[in-house]
Picture 1: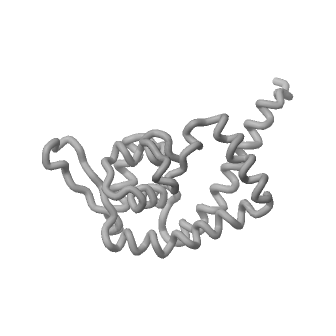
Picture 2: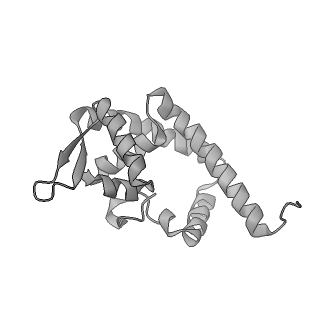
Length: 158
């Protein structure tokens, strides 16, 4: 097999490898605090949007419903979230942060943002804006990050 020399393939491979490397570096800081990146993203969605159904959480953090059940189980075991049933439709389970969850998120968020800024610091602000615009063209899912609730819609959160 001969590796592809198509610039689109090369750009895709570089994008994926870069994203995985940067994500791993930023996530190491969360691991020190006992959280996975997905657990932290779940907490961020809840902190921004308030109570959410598990289905809504899955859409916000781009995970399957099955993954969300395990994530919420673990966050609940740590005392960071609580579940409760919809009073009108018992099939719907809502999740919200506990007081401990709010405090934990608020304590960890500034360090998390600082780690992101640090790993992205090799690019100028103009380059970061251009990168964001390019990624928006490639995937609607990247267009509305969870940290911008005024522009968000369920299913389009990264």
